[in-house]
Image (tube, rainbow over all chains, first blue to last red; front, side, top):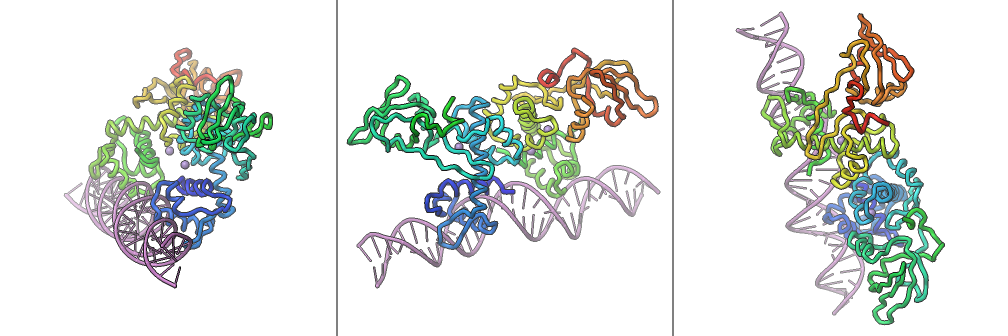
Length: 228
Length: 228
DNA sequence: TTACAGAGTTAGATAATGCTAACTTCGTAA
DNA sequence: TTACGAAGTTAGCATTATCTAACTCTGTAA
Ligand SMILES: [Mn+2]
Ligand SMILES: [Mn+2]
Ligand SMILES: [Mn+2]
Ligand SMILES: [Mn+2]
């Protein structure tokens, strides 16, 4: 099948794909930490394999087959992260580098077992959706905390930044998925947000609140990840 | 560090190493399913890296460094197999191909976690010893069932053949690690052995009894694997 | 004692993945 | 309308891991 390298290219393509569906070679090379000629060369080969639509100087886009394969790698990655947290006791800030490797294991039975032991979770430990077995990635209707109104009561359901540093920062603040928070005030000038939750109160800068995805309480599209 | 390929060569070297400590290129190439020139080429590179003692036309042997690295890969393999059986519910005949891949994951924390969750087992699901963190492989004092005397009462503790077919065959017979068996009779001519255990009685051909490793009851060097 | 079969080696090739240096194309700012 | 810088491409090369074909060495059977 696909080598780990190929799987990583497909995954990067999917991650970089925006509304337009288009990705540039430069973005890919940055994302994967390879030179532009290296990315260019690989793209041509993925194109020959029917995984990417490619024409010289044109933006890249995944074929339907490529998109599905990418989503299935993402499924393996996120199931693994959930397994590591829920069943092995790792912290949410530790699991990404391990999942980055385990996602390339070729064993449907292994990932089916994880899924079954986890009760088919819909979200990973960082609140990102887990694609289904067919490679369908559910969109979720979550809002940036930074877009919410003062006075609103919301539940933390996802993150735009899942870096270990950011996750540790949230740990320090006592924030985790499922935390019910009230927006006490939004600073008119710097857009920082004062929050209260679980007896605590914190003020977060705008850059941070843009990384926090929330839903209305009891709405709960985060079953399988919001609860500890 | 070492690529999966290199780790597989080292592991094969260790597996093929007999009392003499010597291994041939032909054996290696057969074991790994590569051509002799391929094995030859790799051996030279492992030699340059200080993992194997090599001189043209001479038998191969692992250096101390090579032996330790090989044992640490075996540790990862066997811990993984134990984890898959005990914590994920796989059958002992299913786990080898998965462990063959997971053994190449580069994450000390991942394997430490497995070890901890398993309570630092000494044996894998097939009764093979798990090397310690320093790469020391305990020898075990087990006897081939085929060498035992009629009338002896013994406990199944290990296998010389861990192929899926053989494991399924043992499942059918109701034989598993920890099973207490009495040797009812040994056929004088064909050396087949009549056994009774758990209310059952079976006769096994000589080829089979040579694959079964046993210990005296209550001797129990198989803690962590003999019990289900 | 020697010749021959099997084991080991050499040579040359290929595919995957990566690099740097240098060239071309393209969109846009002046 | 053009020219300049960023983006993309081409060319050439390196490394790892593999192959086949052909050669050489070595231990042993006659
Ligand atoms: Mn991740
Ligand atoms: Mn990866
Ligand atoms: Mn195994
Ligand atoms: Mn392996």
